[in-house]
View 1 (cartoon, rainbow, N blue to C red):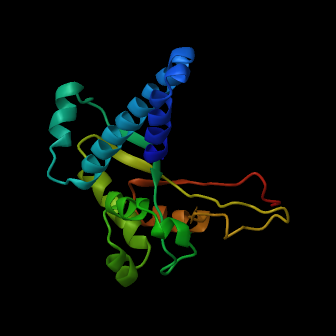
View 2 (view 1 turned 45 degrees about the vertical axis):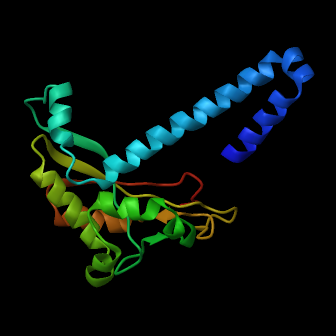
Length: 190
């Protein structure tokens, strides 16, 4: 995409009559270039923050915002699974995406560990993270319903991540600091 924008910009700058007659085209070109650069910089920064364990994010955040003196309930926590000892699944599209290893890292698991110990390991690691937190005492673990087709059935081809309510319900029974958060696609006939 960046190459196409640069080529379009070169064409605009080569044609003097177009450049003189259409200043807005040059402005749009510069705006596109700056948007691409800003997106690349912030995207790279975000990936670095997610991948670097050694970065003292806790120290930085405590300097920016005073930590509360009360316990916090995290209302939006996701878990996922690959179908190892559960009905969870992640589509092949998602597994091949650059996001998949990032999601595993955020969950605190590796694919090898999930293969060996099952999908419930991801919930266990989330529980351990909550337990180790200085301020978050509980987290609502959210299921993730899938795409429902016209006949009212789960469309596995269109669903990227599926975490059934039954899986989350089982996991939240195992850990006192994880609370059950159901997910129901309104197109389900039941």
